[in-house]
Image 1 (cartoon, one colour):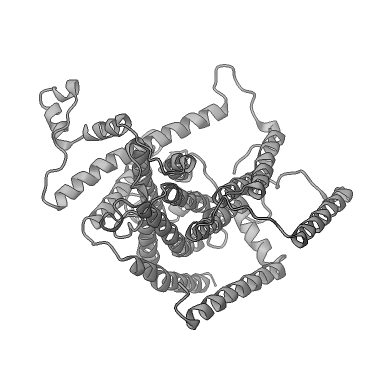
Image 2 (cartoon, each protein chain N blue to C red; image 1 turned 90 degrees about the horizontal axis):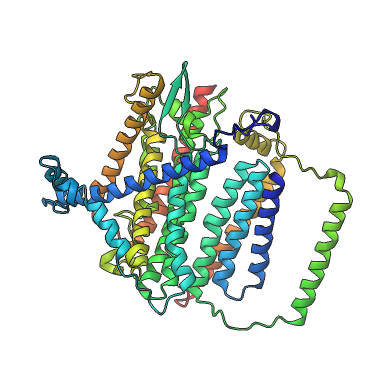
Length: 173
Length: 375
């Protein structure tokens, strides 16, 4: 049963992600990205990581894609316009793809680190949510703080860019 | 959360239905009850609005056989109880015109996308308890460890119904409605999420492992209800639900004086009916969550315990819970027919410059208070 669910959700995720890349219509692409995210969240549920699944849905499917759609709809991107990538972009994509393949192969080589077990039924401390929080603020404190700083930088960047255009003149909306 | 290890699973008896069939039946019943209540809420809205405006409201619709029973028939007719049936049938049987200029796929998908989150969130909402041998068990479809987070995650998907309807309709007013709804709902999600954190801090006192479970939140309110010692959080959450369910004074997505009918302008017949039912289902679930978090759930009075075992106790707890939820739903209608609509910029200003800072301050203050109490 768990295997069947895994393959089903993995297929959903991969098909969704593939269609995002191949779709010409940006609104379709954004909606398919939601399908992919829902598939990922379902995989988290199969693994027993309920908290992660809920956060995945709330943050990505519930907020980020809404903003994507918002921008796509406001800019009214023309779906039928053909876009030809430059050779430089194509070469970049090719190199990135090859590196990705090597990375995945390397991971498979040291396969003894992989586990197909679901999370243990009894969380180490209290409920799974509590143990998640405790782990996050003790063992993974540094990555957590770094992610916070990264987000702060992005936020400052957005504020800086939007401030500059609105100060310059009235062409900014 | 309570998935049994494989070896514990009892062998299915041939006469018994398998577990997943039971779960599906329960889910269908719960969704049916929710939709029936939302139908009644539509009637309630019409009756409450007519009461507030000094009118009579629906009092003519009748059905052949039941309507002609001597005393009860006319009484039910005067109460308007047959009106939801007539309204539903009208929406179902009307011609369903689809404008030529719409994006067909998303035009048909949008009402469904609005309906699904509304009926899904009710799965984790505990609506009563049953006490057997002194142990209380929640009456809930799925007693999740991450209860409230699940509700937020799923209800945040509700915005797609509106944004897709607005975009797929391919005309001005729906589009503006869709854009407004997405901006508004994202803005108010922040203060909604922040405002309820103190409640869960309080529920997770040292030594208590309740996580984000909704049942244990209710169990901590046997004494004082949440609204008594967290009035600011309750107010912020209530205002946020108003904004999230697009109720007046926050009904920017459809404000009829500016946008005809907003995102649902191009919809008719049963597709519009789905949007309509979804709105009321959202209101009912939102009211239920408010009752669970701040109004003590099924505890009938603060500090007065009610320990009735068995099915009678279960029925009583459901009754108390439904009574409180009905009051909050009434409050929604009361506000709608009392306050005028905000301007759009006022809504954005309220959300970002007043509600959000207030929610953050509220969180910090309660975190400090709880830390002092614990030490």
